[in-house]
Length: 595
Image 1: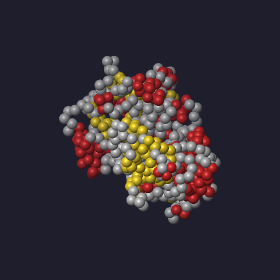
Image 2: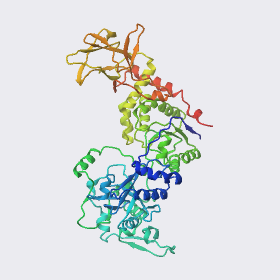
Image 3: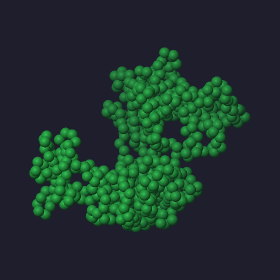
Image 4: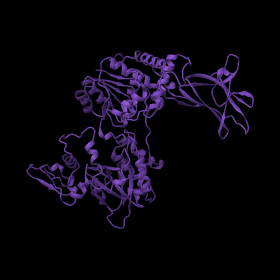
């Protein structure tokens, strides 16, 4: 099958860099080595010599994969020894920050937080970075009593449950007391410093009673056995992995003195716990859990981004997907380390049509303008009897919004019913207001300039050209009995007077009467009518377009306009279905595919 790439402007995320002095020190080496880990380490060594003996740590956070292969949630920090960090070793093989020394270098850096996972450390010889694979690697890093180290840490996607750190699981209570052994014939499950230099004949057995002697994939195997899982492959939903995340099997640091005061950061723990309670209902995207998806109908599936070729094969062989409607931009895929070319090739091999139509993430205006085209693509693919996987990066916003709009516009399902149906089947938080905006834009396109019908928007008209105490300001316009009546403005603070009205989408002209004189506001858009009168003008809402130009994607309403969500009338339902199909049948994804 073919790959369809609908052309759109590319949007690049800016990299978060450190201080300008450090950037200058690093830039000379990066230009020649393309930011290899060795080049970064050497540059940091040069920069350390210029610090004039300061003891605070430095931070370098990078998001551009062309500079250094880090995920978007990773950062690098350079700290002097002692680091002032107490690490914990969890049952899933991860080493993370358990607590920070009060007044220590890590706390002074003001970036390291409890729950951040340790991924890499700089070599003590200054020759690159070392991957932290198990407990022994981290302990070797802490052995040097002096000097400075660069650490690469990964920030978790959701707030870490600090208040649960004292709740140690059974692994910590039993394993560390020597009551739970781990028996194996596989020497590769041993920690890296215990593995023999020469290959064994396979006849040696091991019974392990300490977490220091077990590699991370050994702990993964033990976790799966304890949970009753027989599948050696990590499940795509990661449920059993998340179950053991908070279970700690060991705590260690470079400072074992009892006089050290360990804390969980420079914030009151009570306030952090309250913030966690408030955030319980929030959704957090965890890219490491892999592709997550849900079945909406027999032909529509919705979920997060396709990360690997195995995901494509699973969608084809298990789910039976024959087309993918993807709203990611190319820069998004690059930021998450997704190889678009390999996935496109895999789709072609599996006879899956890949349709890419990028929508900016967390951009309500961009979603509003492009949603009619997205629903049109979905409808045309369904008419061709494709089984479709609708996806974006997180699967929380753009892809479910498209499915909800399809059910609302094409299937004549009430918006609240369509919204509840999709969110009940798939954990998501789509932009409901953007769907309502796009709905009125479609109806406005079908009405072709007519104003008849109930209001669709709440508009706040503001007179801000200066007023004194006692001034009386009234609003008049072609929407108030065709200029024959007026509405008095209300003082809302400062020198502003406001009138809030509910209007139907369309273009309107208006003026203000200030102390008996008809005036227009110079701070708002104006037009001159056929009689030479200068009036203020406002377009409430907009008209849906098949392919909005970049200039039409910018919504410029200087007056505050809010959308109204309400049940549609019979006429509005007919106009909505007509407009949505009109856009859909001007699109043919198959013919647009490159040959």
